[in-house]
Amino acid sequence: MIPPELFNTTVQSAKRARATKEGMFLQELSRDEILERLEAVNRSFTKIAIVTGHPEIWNASVPEATIIPDEDILDLEVGAYDLVIHSIALHHCNDPIGQVVQCGRGLRPDGLFLASCFGGQTLAELRAALSVAETDLRGGLSPRVSPMAEIRELGAVLQRAGLALPVVDSLKIPTSYRDLYHLMRDLRAMGETNVMTARVTSLTAKTLFERAQKIYAEEFSDHNGRLNCTFELVFLSGWAPDASQPKPLKPGSVSKTLQQALKEVKKLPNN
Image 1: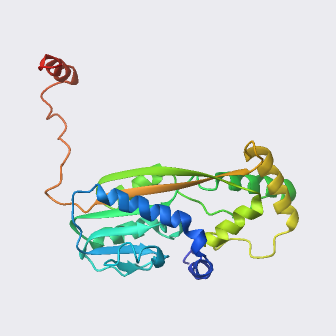
Image 2: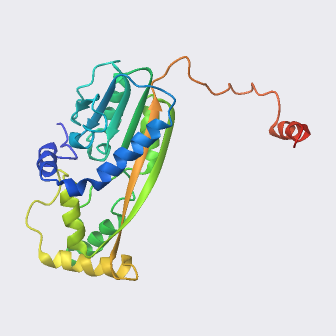
Image 3: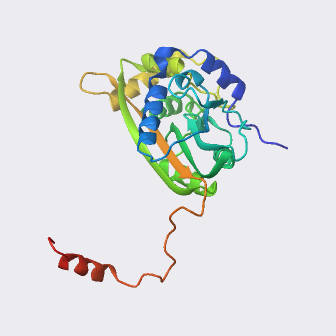
């Protein structure tokens, strides 16, 4: 028996369709960060694919790119691209490792893979407030905030996908909201509300949100009474393996100790 998918892609598409231009500020920030990182790469890219659920974010910035929907099976040509970008979608993939593997297969030798997604610190405050509120009122928990991978787990994804020279880093974006309802409106505008298959589909009692609002304000408010909220964007990069890439030294091949090397450096002129 095949287990149910973690995320409902039909629901995800419907929620994305209701996203607004104003709600795309994190998508736009992620795009700008990726483009800035590309400027630091001493390489010209001639065949680019961008995997995204929001093509409107990328169309004007990289008009020559092929836009690929972030479906479970990616419509990528094998070995066709020298750059594949996966934009803020891995956190809602049923098989994130499979997604990165597919992107790697789409690369030419020494092609670059770049990705962004929400990391494990995203909505940590909201997750905590809802968990405590639901435990207090109902004695148990429901899946209300999607699970998101930590930075170390995402680094392991690059290695398992067989990409060379993997690099992972994160950017935390502190924000604040007037109240819980203000935050949830922003999440709807982003198209980033709950799409888990096991999510509660019945109407949630108002008392749960009132309790969560009280807990949130007590535990995570700033000096102005606004609710602190963290978004974490994680950025991943790796290269399709190629013989021209630098390789680590073999164990036992080093002829000098670090102490010897430092002594030699000190003897050099101007040191």
